Picture 1 (spheres, helix red, strand yellow):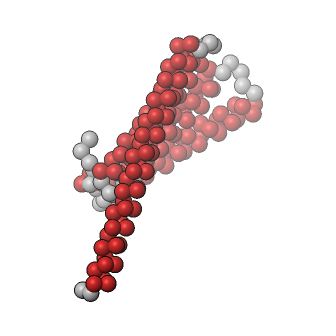
Picture 2: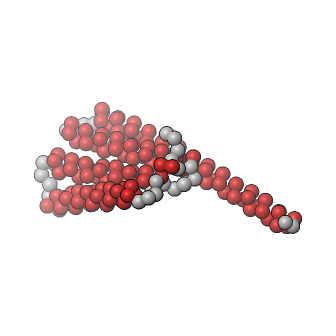
Picture 3: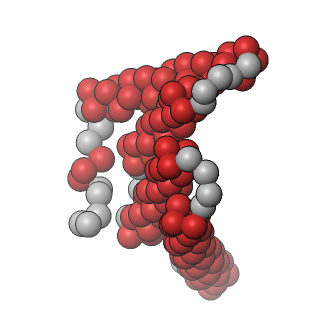
Amino acid sequence: MTRDSEKQASQSSLGDAVLRTVIVLIEYAIVVSLLVVAADVLVRTLIDFFTGSGPLPQLVVAAIDGILVVIILLDVAHTVFGNLRVFVFRVRPFLIIGVLAGIRDILSASARLSLSGSLSRVAFTDTLVSLAMGVGVVFFLLLGLVILKMSQHDESDNAPET
């Protein structure tokens, strides 16, 4: 190997190391940001629940909605943090997060239908469409999980210990 090729190889590996370090720092910043947002949503949800005025069922639905958002944010943070420890992109955690988000939408639409005394025809139709879309999203994401499970690809070999 000539000196020029050795110099280029060391510069390339140094550039790769710097790029990996920048990516890891950005991913840590994302995890911290998600945790801060999740904490903020949880605190605001609890404050709104305990100090809110209005019918109790609506306060409960809003609290459950906020808590489900916190769970989704924590799952995303956990997945990103897991990717920091293993440099393999795993699809399964994102499918699960999508299922949780879809279930949250289904619960919100169901709560609107059951708690609203009377909805206008347009609001009723919009809520039913939202409910159907949530069910469709959950169905297809679950189908993706089944296909992933049936495939020969096993992500557990690369999964970090949690």
